Length: 174
Image (cartoon, rainbow, N blue to C red):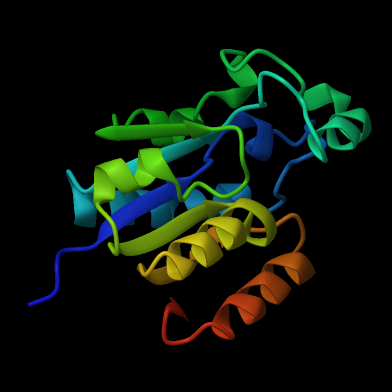
């Protein structure tokens, strides 16, 4: 019998939901109900992630923040809070990372190595994709719930899903 899967809700934060944000995922609101349903289904096996800026910008992060200076804020800035529609669920585990991909020591510490992960959240073409690839490389089984993800655009969302499908059977799209 395979271990029960973990739901990972990736970066359901105001910075990706607010239409005034440069990083708004236009279909973010459409992910809320599917995410809420997944949370109910997975109960205590849910991890929410938060993207936060790295405290010190090095390497490629230097020109990145020159391009997107609006995102260079304190990790405690309200723009990095989870949206109210998700925060009210009081999810049991939180991982905050200054990287697009959330698979790493913190997430592995919660789920265990070679976990079965179900991914939802934003942006499909950035943080979801980066998390899925790193987790699959580490030996995790990854399922991406397309209806519970939103991209920076519809085209980018579809392209990211298509790219992840190339990694079957390690990554599957449902």
